[in-house]
Amino acid sequence: MLPVLAAVLAFITIGGLGWAFVGGGDSSDAAVKRAQSFGAPKQNAAAARKAAANTPEARRKQIMQQLQEADRLERKARLTLPAKLKQAGLSMNVQTFWIVSAVLGVVAALLPMLFGLNPLIALGLGLVFGLGLPRWVVGFLGKRRCKKFSSHFADAVDVIVRGIKSGLPVHDCFKIIARESPAPLGPEFQRLVEGMGVGLTLPQALDKMYERMPTPELKFFSIVIGIQQKTGGNLAEALSNLSAVLRARKMMGEKIKALSSEATASAGIIGSLPPAVMILVSLTTPAYMAKLFTDPRGQFMLLVAVVMMSFGVFVMKKMISFKF
Image (tube, rainbow, N blue to C red; front, side):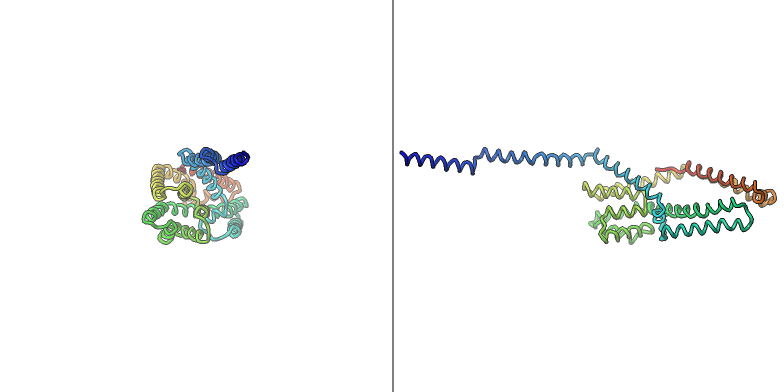
């Protein structure tokens, strides 16, 4: 009996150990289910976030956030003096600009005093030529340069679209634009290519380019590139749609310019009429207008008239300037 009992106990022990270590099909399935239950919430949450990021509402919010950030950066880029010098394409620094402005202001203030005019007039001319005129020239050059850049930017986007469809990389398309496009579009894309050549990513290089050329067209292009890199998709189709939008926007701007041409002409006539009448009266009867320049009261009246005319021209310019 003892050998039989020992054999039964040994069989039961070996079977129990084998069942414990190997396990049956039910426990294996339970282990798999437990493992899936641990990993499933993370996978489901990641899939839910990815699906939520690809919804039209999420993309719309992302685009709105990027547009708000672009508007903030655009305002900041247009306000600072170093940014204005970059936009104008001038190589001088801020210190050189202020030195030139100070020299112009001093010269403009000393010349009227040499001819015996009122010191207030000399002070006004010094402020105009020292503070107003140089900044106006820089702003004018910057706006003209940005306008030239925007007028050819849609053609550059078309070059990128045709290059992508023919199998060229985007970097090679940038090189073609830098080589074939007129200034300032070509030189700006050349600097973009050089920046990417020294290690900058495409969004970083486009941000640098936007600092030098803060145009809405370039910001739209940056947004399209950024969204395509994050979500994927057909870049050629997206840029083709962007080109159509840019051309429609340009056409709308031309229509606005044509519709507001009458108001612009009226503002020009109203603004130039008082100086023109003053010049004509000075040519026909110089003694009649000489009191404004020789008498202190006339000089004060002339200064007030210039200030009021400047304010009126500024208001009319704001009224006929349309943002779109």
